Length: 77
Image (cartoon, rainbow, N blue to C red; front, side, top):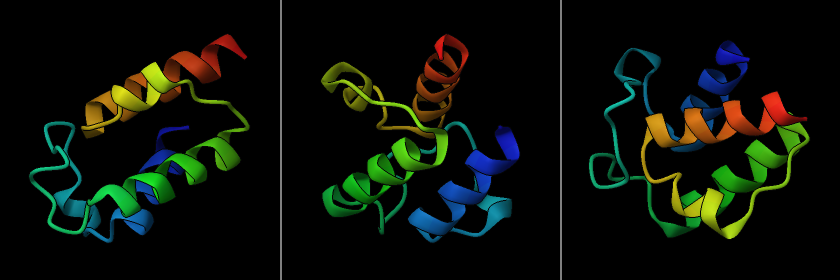
């Protein structure tokens, strides 16, 4: 799952894979705006066949938040 998620994050956020770090937030990545966040949410839901709640989405403002959210949803599925 991690490699799939990493590939998705690199593609949607348009950042080099060597710059992908759990500490990154929306404020750190210029391209990560509200529209890109919506693209990310849709891509995560489609790729991992999960449904994200409003609380899940609110927790997805950092790479670590995205990882934790996806891991909890995929593990619960």
